[in-house]
Image (cartoon, rainbow, N blue to C red; front, side):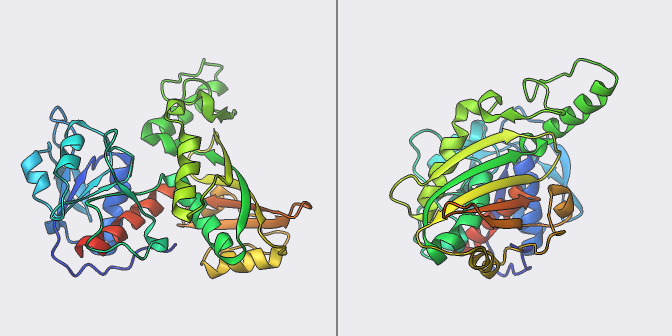
Length: 335
């Protein structure tokens, strides 16, 4: 779960669609961490109406351009970080010469894509389908926790609650939470164009959030099932927005297929290089991991019914998916 090691040695040309989005920002940083030189990376918006803006790549000023289909399709791999007018056409152009990696479920209805978590799918190679998709950030978070448990003990069932930070809703979400918090201290009515209602000093279930229509809980649970190779549903998931700016908190209960103790669960997670806190005073919160990457397990305890509770926090779920996207691209086009 650590930062990418710089290893770009190939010649592939890369396009990033939606470069100024939250996902695009994380993807750009992952490409920099991988060592991909800016001379092989082109940054684009996703609509013709978008005005060119100055951004940066690896500390150098770069222009995020209006998308030109022929120009974008001439690259070896296109990362899709935001829906937009050009995206459907790019998916139609995908071929053995042009690989498209979808980080945000932007592909049009009916478009076929292979869902891949590169850590757990060794079959991805240069003959893979032209359109590849990353699981949702939240699905990746759960897969990272459940995969070592499934591999070590089998998982009969799992129940998870994820508290989503304001950053899940982009910079506008972060700003809205800040403004609501400040405004409530002066007894001002909270503005809520992003969350639809007050999030400050509150919790909002997924059903009332703006992305509720997406069926996000069902989608995330389905992607976990697909990547882990379960033939039936084993995960029940509840999502809610919490009044924190960054960092996801996860309460996960899983029931193993055989009897195991908490020490064995900790060992399985640590073998997967997921840090597990120890000792009575070692509880971890999102604030404690705000300057780190990856998943951190704060506590593992038996539930008294044959299962175990795991409390985990993740500082940058989007950064983890961006890292996986870059490694996936390297597996199919040789960055």
